[in-house]
Amino acid sequence: MIESVPEQRTLERKVSTMGFLKIHELCKVYGRGENQVAALDHVSLDIKRGEFTAIIGTSGSGKSTLLHAIGCVDVPTSGKIYLNGQDVYAQSSDKLAIFRRRQVGLIYQFHNLIPTLNVVENITLPILMDKRKVNQKRLSELLHLLGLEERKNHLPNQLSGGQQQRVAIGRALMNAPQVMLADEPTGSLDSKNGHEIIKLLKESNRIYGQTLLLVTHDESIALQADRIIGISDGRVVRDEKVVRS
Ligand SMILES: Nc1ncnc2c1ncn2[C@@H]1O[C@H](COP(=O)(O)OP(=O)(O)OP(=O)(O)O)[C@@H](O)[C@H]1O
Ligand SMILES: [Mg+2]
Image 1: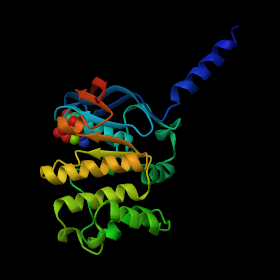
Image 2 (image 1 turned 30 degrees about the horizontal axis):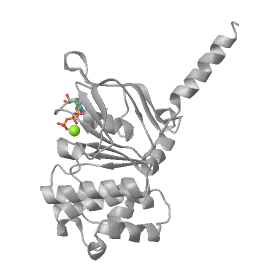
Image 3 (image 1 turned 120 degrees about the vertical axis):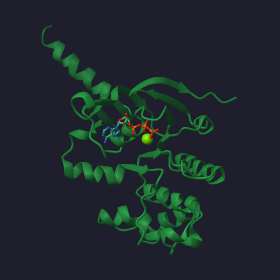
Protein backbone atom coordinates (compact mmCIF):
# COMPACT_ATOMS: atom_id res chain seq x y z
CA MET A 1 0.00 0.00 0.00
CA ILE A 2 2.69 2.45 1.04
CA GLU A 3 4.71 1.77 -2.10
CA SER A 4 1.80 2.39 -4.41
CA VAL A 5 1.66 6.07 -3.45
CA PRO A 6 4.85 7.20 -5.23
CA GLU A 7 3.88 5.04 -8.22
CA GLN A 8 0.58 6.82 -8.38
CA ARG A 9 2.36 10.17 -8.20
CA THR A 10 4.68 9.24 -11.07
CA LEU A 11 1.70 8.26 -13.15
CA GLU A 12 -0.08 11.50 -12.34
CA ARG A 13 3.00 13.50 -13.26
CA LYS A 14 3.24 11.68 -16.61
CA VAL A 15 -0.39 12.29 -17.40
CA SER A 16 -0.21 15.92 -16.41
CA THR A 17 2.67 16.68 -18.82
CA MET A 18 0.97 15.05 -21.78
CA GLY A 19 -1.02 16.98 -24.37
CA PHE A 20 0.44 19.21 -27.03
CA LEU A 21 1.50 22.50 -25.45
CA LYS A 22 1.14 22.62 -21.72
CA ILE A 23 2.06 25.63 -19.65
CA HIS A 24 2.23 24.96 -15.96
CA GLU A 25 2.34 27.62 -13.24
CA LEU A 26 4.54 29.87 -15.32
CA CYS A 27 6.02 32.90 -13.55
CA LYS A 28 8.30 35.62 -14.84
CA VAL A 29 9.62 38.25 -12.49
CA TYR A 30 11.59 41.18 -13.86
CA GLY A 31 13.79 43.44 -11.76
CA ARG A 32 14.60 43.40 -8.06
CA GLY A 33 13.36 44.91 -4.85
CA GLU A 34 10.99 47.83 -5.32
CA ASN A 35 11.27 47.61 -9.09
CA GLN A 36 10.14 44.02 -9.18
CA VAL A 37 7.42 43.26 -11.72
CA ALA A 38 5.55 39.95 -11.88
CA ALA A 39 5.02 39.92 -15.65
CA LEU A 40 3.62 36.37 -15.48
CA ASP A 41 1.94 35.18 -12.33
CA HIS A 42 1.29 31.42 -12.26
CA VAL A 43 -0.06 31.05 -15.77
CA SER A 44 -1.35 27.57 -16.62
CA LEU A 45 -2.75 26.70 -20.03
CA ASP A 46 -3.39 23.68 -22.22
CA ILE A 47 -3.17 24.37 -25.92
CA LYS A 48 -4.33 21.75 -28.41
CA ARG A 49 -2.38 20.86 -31.53
CA GLY A 50 -3.60 22.94 -34.46
CA GLU A 51 -5.54 25.32 -32.25
CA PHE A 52 -5.65 29.03 -33.14
CA THR A 53 -5.62 31.00 -29.91
CA ALA A 54 -5.84 34.76 -29.64
CA ILE A 55 -4.23 36.40 -26.60
CA ILE A 56 -5.65 39.73 -25.56
CA GLY A 57 -5.02 42.13 -22.68
CA THR A 58 -4.07 45.69 -21.93
CA SER A 59 -0.57 47.07 -22.47
CA GLY A 60 1.86 45.66 -19.91
CA SER A 61 -0.37 42.71 -19.00
CA GLY A 62 2.27 40.12 -19.91
CA LYS A 63 1.26 38.96 -23.40
CA SER A 64 4.70 39.34 -25.01
CA THR A 65 6.38 37.86 -21.95
CA LEU A 66 4.21 34.76 -22.33
CA LEU A 67 5.02 34.42 -26.03
CA HIS A 68 8.74 34.92 -25.39
CA ALA A 69 8.69 32.23 -22.72
CA ILE A 70 6.96 29.78 -25.08
CA GLY A 71 9.29 30.82 -27.90
CA CYS A 72 12.33 30.12 -25.71
CA VAL A 73 13.72 33.62 -26.09
CA ASP A 74 13.18 34.59 -22.46
CA VAL A 75 13.64 32.03 -19.70
CA PRO A 76 10.78 31.99 -17.15
CA THR A 77 11.56 32.51 -13.46
CA SER A 78 9.63 29.38 -12.51
CA GLY A 79 7.06 26.98 -13.89
CA LYS A 80 7.21 24.60 -16.82
CA ILE A 81 6.45 24.47 -20.50
CA TYR A 82 5.91 21.08 -22.11
CA LEU A 83 5.72 20.52 -25.83
CA ASN A 84 4.59 17.00 -26.72
CA GLY A 85 5.33 15.98 -23.15
CA GLN A 86 8.90 17.33 -23.29
CA ASP A 87 9.98 19.77 -20.62
CA VAL A 88 11.26 22.49 -22.95
CA TYR A 89 13.57 24.27 -20.51
CA ALA A 90 15.04 21.04 -19.15
CA GLN A 91 17.11 20.77 -22.36
CA SER A 92 20.75 21.79 -22.54
CA SER A 93 21.31 25.26 -23.97
CA ASP A 94 22.56 23.77 -27.28
CA LYS A 95 19.45 21.64 -27.64
CA LEU A 96 17.27 24.56 -26.63
CA ALA A 97 18.77 26.70 -29.41
CA ILE A 98 18.03 23.98 -31.98
CA PHE A 99 14.55 23.52 -30.52
CA ARG A 100 13.91 27.24 -30.82
CA ARG A 101 15.00 27.28 -34.46
CA ARG A 102 13.05 24.20 -35.48
CA GLN A 103 9.94 23.95 -33.35
CA VAL A 104 8.76 27.50 -32.85
CA GLY A 105 8.28 30.39 -35.23
CA LEU A 106 8.12 33.92 -33.85
CA ILE A 107 6.67 36.89 -35.67
CA TYR A 108 6.97 40.35 -34.19
CA GLN A 109 5.26 43.61 -34.99
CA PHE A 110 8.54 44.97 -36.27
CA HIS A 111 9.81 42.35 -38.55
CA ASN A 112 13.54 42.16 -37.78
CA LEU A 113 14.57 41.37 -41.32
CA ILE A 114 18.25 41.53 -42.22
CA PRO A 115 18.51 44.64 -44.45
CA THR A 116 21.38 43.32 -46.58
CA LEU A 117 19.66 40.02 -47.42
CA ASN A 118 17.00 39.65 -50.10
CA VAL A 119 13.58 38.03 -49.63
CA VAL A 120 14.70 34.45 -50.30
CA GLU A 121 17.84 34.86 -48.15
CA ASN A 122 15.81 36.28 -45.26
CA ILE A 123 13.25 33.47 -45.46
CA THR A 124 15.87 30.71 -45.62
CA LEU A 125 18.19 32.20 -43.01
CA PRO A 126 17.04 29.91 -40.14
CA ILE A 127 17.65 26.83 -42.32
CA LEU A 128 21.14 28.00 -43.28
CA MET A 129 21.94 28.87 -39.65
CA ASP A 130 20.87 25.35 -38.81
CA LYS A 131 23.34 24.09 -41.47
CA ARG A 132 20.56 22.29 -43.32
CA LYS A 133 19.58 22.15 -46.97
CA VAL A 134 16.81 24.42 -48.16
CA ASN A 135 13.73 22.52 -49.27
CA GLN A 136 13.21 24.27 -52.62
CA LYS A 137 9.70 22.89 -53.00
CA ARG A 138 8.62 24.33 -49.69
CA LEU A 139 10.33 27.62 -50.50
CA SER A 140 8.42 27.94 -53.82
CA GLU A 141 5.18 26.93 -52.11
CA LEU A 142 5.74 29.57 -49.43
CA LEU A 143 6.68 32.34 -51.88
CA HIS A 144 3.44 31.56 -53.70
CA LEU A 145 1.36 31.53 -50.51
CA LEU A 146 2.95 34.80 -49.42
CA GLY A 147 2.48 36.43 -52.82
CA LEU A 148 6.20 37.20 -52.96
CA GLU A 149 7.20 35.28 -56.11
CA GLU A 150 7.78 38.52 -58.01
CA ARG A 151 9.75 40.04 -55.15
CA LYS A 152 12.09 37.24 -54.22
CA ASN A 153 15.29 39.12 -55.07
CA HIS A 154 14.25 42.39 -53.45
CA LEU A 155 15.87 43.77 -50.31
CA PRO A 156 13.63 44.64 -47.34
CA ASN A 157 13.84 48.41 -48.02
CA GLN A 158 12.48 47.76 -51.52
CA LEU A 159 9.31 46.24 -50.07
CA SER A 160 6.12 47.65 -48.55
CA GLY A 161 5.41 47.17 -44.84
CA GLY A 162 2.91 44.40 -45.60
CA GLN A 163 5.37 42.62 -47.88
CA GLN A 164 8.12 42.86 -45.24
CA GLN A 165 5.75 41.35 -42.70
CA ARG A 166 4.99 38.53 -45.13
CA VAL A 167 8.73 37.84 -45.46
CA ALA A 168 8.92 37.61 -41.66
CA ILE A 169 6.03 35.13 -41.72
CA GLY A 170 7.79 33.16 -44.44
CA ARG A 171 10.93 33.01 -42.33
CA ALA A 172 8.90 31.75 -39.37
CA LEU A 173 7.12 29.18 -41.56
CA MET A 174 10.12 27.90 -43.50
CA ASN A 175 11.12 25.44 -40.81
CA ALA A 176 7.52 24.16 -40.55
CA PRO A 177 7.50 24.83 -36.82
CA GLN A 178 4.93 23.11 -34.67
CA VAL A 179 4.05 26.34 -32.93
CA MET A 180 3.69 29.74 -34.51
CA LEU A 181 3.85 32.71 -32.15
CA ALA A 182 2.73 36.06 -33.52
CA ASP A 183 3.06 39.17 -31.38
CA GLU A 184 0.73 41.83 -32.79
CA PRO A 185 1.77 40.99 -36.34
CA THR A 186 -0.62 43.56 -37.79
CA GLY A 187 0.19 46.35 -35.34
CA SER A 188 2.25 48.42 -37.77
CA LEU A 189 0.09 47.80 -40.84
CA ASP A 190 -2.98 49.46 -42.33
CA SER A 191 -6.24 47.52 -42.10
CA LYS A 192 -6.05 46.02 -45.62
CA ASN A 193 -2.52 44.67 -45.15
CA GLY A 194 -3.37 43.64 -41.60
CA HIS A 195 -6.33 41.67 -42.89
CA GLU A 196 -4.12 39.95 -45.50
CA ILE A 197 -1.59 38.93 -42.83
CA ILE A 198 -4.28 37.41 -40.62
CA LYS A 199 -5.70 35.56 -43.64
CA LEU A 200 -2.24 34.19 -44.34
CA LEU A 201 -1.65 33.08 -40.75
CA LYS A 202 -5.05 31.36 -40.73
CA GLU A 203 -4.19 29.67 -44.05
CA SER A 204 -0.93 28.31 -42.70
CA ASN A 205 -2.69 27.23 -39.52
CA ARG A 206 -5.19 25.35 -41.70
CA ILE A 207 -2.86 24.02 -44.43
CA TYR A 208 0.08 23.00 -42.23
CA GLY A 209 -1.98 22.26 -39.09
CA GLN A 210 0.25 24.61 -37.14
CA THR A 211 -0.68 25.71 -33.68
CA LEU A 212 -1.05 29.46 -33.69
CA LEU A 213 -0.86 31.80 -30.72
CA LEU A 214 -1.53 35.36 -31.73
CA VAL A 215 -1.39 38.47 -29.56
CA THR A 216 -3.73 41.20 -30.70
CA HIS A 217 -5.43 44.34 -29.46
CA ASP A 218 -8.06 43.96 -32.14
CA GLU A 219 -11.24 42.23 -30.97
CA SER A 220 -12.34 41.49 -34.55
CA ILE A 221 -9.09 39.56 -35.13
CA ALA A 222 -9.46 37.76 -31.80
CA LEU A 223 -12.95 36.65 -32.81
CA GLN A 224 -11.49 34.80 -35.81
CA ALA A 225 -9.57 32.47 -33.46
CA ASP A 226 -10.82 29.16 -32.02
CA ARG A 227 -10.15 30.41 -28.53
CA ILE A 228 -9.55 33.70 -26.76
CA ILE A 229 -7.33 34.00 -23.71
CA GLY A 230 -7.38 37.24 -21.76
CA ILE A 231 -4.38 38.26 -19.65
CA SER A 232 -4.39 40.89 -16.94
CA ASP A 233 -1.51 41.64 -14.55
CA GLY A 234 0.25 38.46 -15.66
CA ARG A 235 -2.73 36.21 -14.99
CA VAL A 236 -5.22 34.41 -17.18
CA VAL A 237 -8.53 36.13 -16.51
CA ARG A 238 -10.50 34.88 -19.50
CA ASP A 239 -10.45 31.66 -21.48
CA GLU A 240 -13.24 31.12 -23.96
CA LYS A 241 -13.96 29.08 -27.04
CA VAL A 242 -15.21 31.14 -29.95
CA VAL A 243 -18.58 29.81 -31.02
CA ARG A 244 -19.47 30.38 -34.66
CA SER A 245 -23.00 30.20 -35.90
N1 LIG B 1 13.01 43.33 -19.82
C1 LIG B 1 12.15 43.80 -18.91
N2 LIG B 1 12.60 44.32 -17.76
C2 LIG B 1 11.75 44.77 -16.81
N3 LIG B 1 10.41 44.75 -16.92
C3 LIG B 1 9.90 44.24 -18.07
C4 LIG B 1 10.73 43.74 -19.12
N4 LIG B 1 9.96 43.31 -20.12
C5 LIG B 1 8.68 43.51 -19.73
N5 LIG B 1 8.65 44.07 -18.49
C6 LIG B 1 7.44 44.41 -17.72
O1 LIG B 1 6.63 43.24 -17.66
C7 LIG B 1 5.26 43.57 -17.84
C8 LIG B 1 4.69 42.79 -18.99
O2 LIG B 1 5.30 43.23 -20.19
P1 LIG B 1 4.90 42.67 -21.62
O3 LIG B 1 5.86 43.20 -22.60
O4 LIG B 1 4.75 41.20 -21.54
O5 LIG B 1 3.43 43.32 -21.83
P2 LIG B 1 2.45 43.24 -23.06
O6 LIG B 1 1.15 42.69 -22.55
O7 LIG B 1 3.10 42.55 -24.19
O8 LIG B 1 2.22 44.79 -23.40
P3 LIG B 1 2.03 45.54 -24.80
O9 LIG B 1 0.60 45.31 -25.21
O10 LIG B 1 2.30 46.97 -24.47
O11 LIG B 1 3.01 44.97 -25.78
C9 LIG B 1 5.20 45.08 -18.01
O12 LIG B 1 4.86 45.67 -16.79
C10 LIG B 1 6.60 45.45 -18.42
O13 LIG B 1 6.94 46.75 -17.98
MG1 LIG C 1 3.76 43.18 -26.08
